Every structure is written in C-alpha cells, then in structure tokens.
Length: 108
Image 1 (cartoon, rainbow, N blue to C red):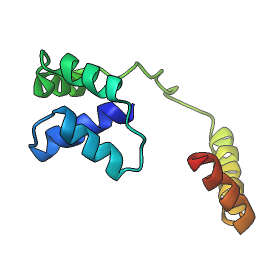
Image 2: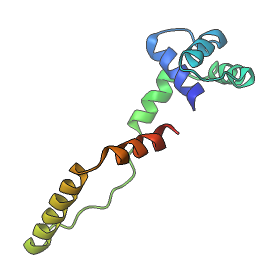
Image 3: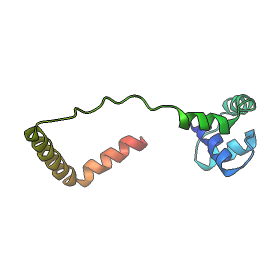
Image 4: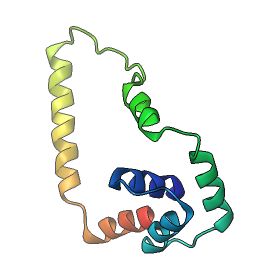
C-alpha cells in the first residue's frame, strides 16, 4: 500500500513516477524498500493514466446507505439523545493510559 501512496504523492507533486523517486519517498518515510516491488509498480503504472483513474474513483457512486425512517416516536429520539450525551461524557473521561493504548494500536 505504501508503494501506491508513494506513487500518488509523486503524481500530486508533479514529479516523474520512476524507481529512483519512489525509493526516495519510501526511504524518507522510513520504509525498507523492496526493489522488486518498486520495479513492478513502475512497470504497471506506465500503461495507466493516473488522472483518469482518480477521476473515475471520485465519480464512483458511494455504497447505498439505507434511508432512515421518516417518522420516529419522540420518546425514542429523546432516549437516543440521552444515550449520546452519556457516551460523550464517558468519552471525555478517557485516561491518558487509554489514549496511549489506542495510539499504540494504531502505530503498532
């Protein structure tokens, strides 16, 4: 995934997507470079119009989300609001240790 990100970063910066530039981006991010993956990526991207692919990705429809019911009972809405408020209060009282554990999970 990081190889694709490197190529997209180079594309966005207006730089040529070649082996040398991809290696520089990956090394700057502290990633150990796999020469074979870099070569295969560059070879695969030679025949791809990145601008067109990005345009198609942005124009792709988002997965259908079920519509919410038109009318809900007021009591149900009040209960949901109370639950949300309680959850927000609980979220505010997160300890520093819990935050550190969460960040550790993100960055391994």
